[in-house]
Image 1 (cartoon, rainbow, N blue to C red):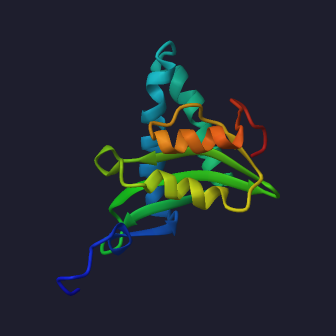
Image 2: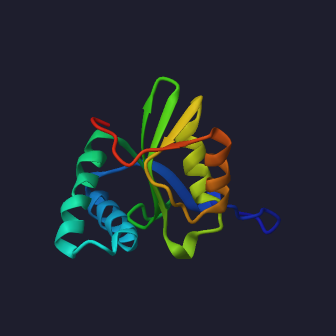
Length: 148
């Protein structure tokens, strides 16, 4: 790269489909992130509930954002499902150190491309840009989505 070229996020990251070795990180971070929202539950109750994330992950798509040179270095991910005209967003996660770089916004844009409607099963995203985009769609929040 010459001195006059600007290093951008695209030079450093890659968007890819989840691989078997990524599942542990995705499920663990998803479960840990949600734990504070369910502080009224005991750990055994919460983790019994959180096991539904495993089933969701098996039925949905997951796009990972990782380092280009080391794909095992995960920066974030999105778990979603597309049905004609609708994007169902189950979860978006970006590691704290990599927030504010537009990663969650790009993941959201990818998952919702060509969708007229968005359904979010998680009511809280720390990324304000994603929250604003969700509001733009008039998103329906659903706690329970059977079969998806």
